[in-house]
Structure formats: C-alpha cells, structure tokens
Amino acid sequence: MDAMRWEDGVLLLLDQTKLPEETEYLRCSRPEEVATAIRRLAVRGAPAIGIAAAYGLALGAREFKGTDKGAFFRHLRAVKDLLAGTRPTAVNLFWALERAYRRAEELAERNIADIQEAVLAEANRLFEEDREICRRIGAHGAALVPPGARILTHCNAGALATAGYGTALGVIRAAHAAGRVAMVYVDETRPLLQGARLTAYELKADGIPVTLICDNMAGYAMQKGLIDLVIFGADRIARNGDTANKIGSYSLAVLAREHGIPVYVAAPLSTIDGNLDDGREIPIEERDPGEVTHITGKRFAPEGVAVWNPAFDVTPHRYITGIITEAGVLRPPFEGAFRQALAAKGECRPPAC
Ligand code: MRU
Image 1: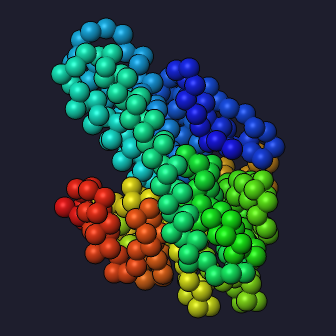
Image 2: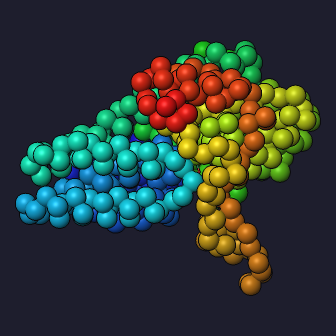
C-alpha cells in the first residue's frame, strides 16, 4: 500500500479520497498536479505531503527548458512557492521543500541538467529516509506498549501518511509484530473520515485487530477501561512540545488525562518547528464548510447553516507523556530533549542551534 511512487519521470499518487472503495493512482507529470493533489487531500499526512512536494519540485525542475540559470532558479522558486502554498499546518511540507531546493542551490555552479537530477535525487532520498525513520519510530515505540495493550488512535498516521509503515501506525505495527496488541480502537475522524477510511483499512489489511468507533465514543471507551494508551501523529510540534495534529486529538488528550491514560505522539524530528515557542503560533488550516455539511458528497446539514471547519488542533505539551521519534522516546521537558536529539543527528536548527 504505497501512498506514492516515482515511475518513468512521473509521480504516481494513490488517490486517498477514493479509499477504501477504489485504488486509483493519479499520474502527476507537472508540479501543478501535485499541488492540486495535496490541496484536495489525494495525498495527505505530514511526511507524505512533504515528500510529494519534493517530487513536485523535481517535476518543476525537469520541465524547465533552456540554459539561462537565472531563469531556471526563478522558475524553481515559483514552483516551490506554489507547493508551499498548498497546506499551512504540517511543517514537513516546508522542511522537505527547503531541503530539495537547497540541494539545487548547492549545485548552482553546475549545469542545469545536473541540478535537475540532483533535485530528483533529493526527493528520492527523502522518500527512502522516511521509510527508515518510520521503522525506527516503530521500534522505539513498541517498547512502550504493554502486553495485551488496547490502543486508541486518531486520524491516519500510517503507511498512507508516510513513505511507508507509518509513525503512530508504525508503533502499532511493531508492537503487533511483538505480540503485544490486543485491540486498536480507531476514531472515525470527522469530517473526512481518515480513521474509518484509511486507518481501519490499513490495520485490517495487515491483520491487526481493529475496532472502529465514532469520535464521540472515545471518552466512554476510556471510562469503561477499554483503553491502555493513546497514540497519534503530528503535523507540527512547537519547541515546548505543544503538538498540532488532526482536529480531535486535543479532546482525546484531555480525556486521557482524566482517566490516567498515557498519550504518545509519534513523529519524525522533521515535524519539530523549533522556530515557534509554543502551539499558539502554529497556523491552523481551515477547510471548506462542505466537508462538514456533507459526508462522501452527500449533504445532510441544512442549506445555509454556518460552519466552522478547522482541520487541526493543538494539544498542549502538559498532556503528552512522550514523543516517539527516530532518535528515541523524548520526555518532558521537551525543549531540552529536542535540542539533544537534533544535535545528536547533526541537524543544526532551532532549538539545537
Ligand atoms: O488532514 P490530514 O489527513 O493531512 O491530517 C493528517 C494528520 O493529522 C496526521 O495525524 C499527521 O499528519 C501525521 S501523519 C504521519
């Protein structure tokens, strides 16, 4: 189940809006097509949109004809801006685009063909690295899962949201392989049902025990003693550990605290935005009201009703037990833990330096 693959100069994106009924790959040969796919959530999930955008930049580099280096870089910057303007919350989008663009800049003295190739090579590297990172997150996180665990997750932080294996679902996959998972409860995740359509589908396909619940059943499930831990992914983590993730994650964390249940966030270090002091600075995407008034294209709310549709919320760091990264499980106080983890990886960016 690959969210994307590069094949013969084309980016193939699994159209996640059609899952689980249809498995259809979109063929993107122009950066505009990648931008549209990201905007309409054909590809979604923080790491996946970052990697798709890097491939979009590679497509933009490759479509340039001519020998004028100045014109080439102006074109590349315009493509980068187009892709960066698709969704505002997941920082992985900007991080991956920056990495692919920086590679072009590093080779600015070389000929355009070399630079075009290097941008594609960087996108491929991001893809391969993400697979490896998810495996490591899985291995670190599995150690936190007690035998017979009943886990609650929200939205989709799985293979479909990454280059493969997943972050939160990577932990669940690794824990399941170690024989520790009794049940995974999956919130349906309104308005776009990533839990019901994507996470339930992924877990079922892997033979992992899964029970689908509506979002408003989570509190009762906790009260009944059905949940041992909560794991979800992240779209952006501020330097103090405040975490933006799919709308509804905050409610789960507050409920979990009331019931003494640990809450883990699973995310690559690239999701940390050390430039932001706390979660209040994270830009929260607001999406089309039609996503709330309709389900899979069918209207069920009255015409003209006012709608508010924030796509993400922020869980304050005090509700988060630990953040599972490729560098290990980071514990509060998070800022120091981020600094150490980034420095150990040789990444010089805030809060490391
Ligand atoms: O709107 P989406 O589907 O892109 O939201 C996705 C999430 O909130 C995920 O939990 C997050 O991006 C982490 S994916 C590994």
